[in-house]
Amino acid sequence: EVDLVESGGGSVQPGGSLKLSCISSGRQYQTQCTAWFRQAPGMERTEIAATYTGSGLGIFYAGSVKGRFTIYQDNAKRTVYLEMNSLRPEDSGMYYCAARSCILGDYVRSQPRAEHEYEHWGRGTQVTVSS
Image (cartoon, rainbow, N blue to C red; front, side, top):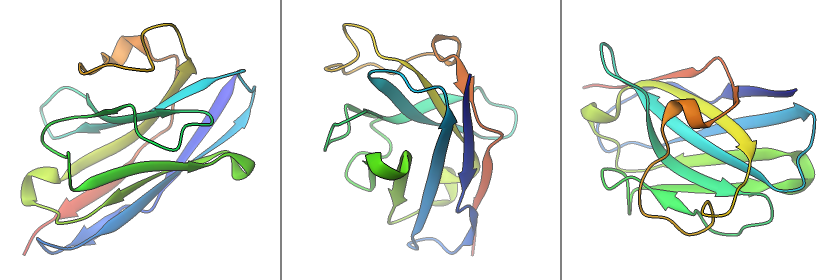
């Protein structure tokens, strides 16, 4: 089992920044794909960014966050970060970290993965963007 714990959420004004962290523990995949999902009240969870073990780049960004959010990781700490800049009220929601063993097709893609495609989930951290 892969255990995931998110942190770093909070309240910020529009235009502000936050950095979320997701720490993995337990089972280690040879190559782990880790993603951040966002869920606004009454909405589905949607994937907004993803990366994989050893990658220096994000492999997927949702259009709504591209250019403002950056996903990166510290493999030694088994931690994946989501740096969020130029935050907007519509970025508010619960942010979840998700993980699975990567499969062919994960490394280069333009479409988000669905919630059910990830095996392991954290409990989430709340982000509120409001003036």
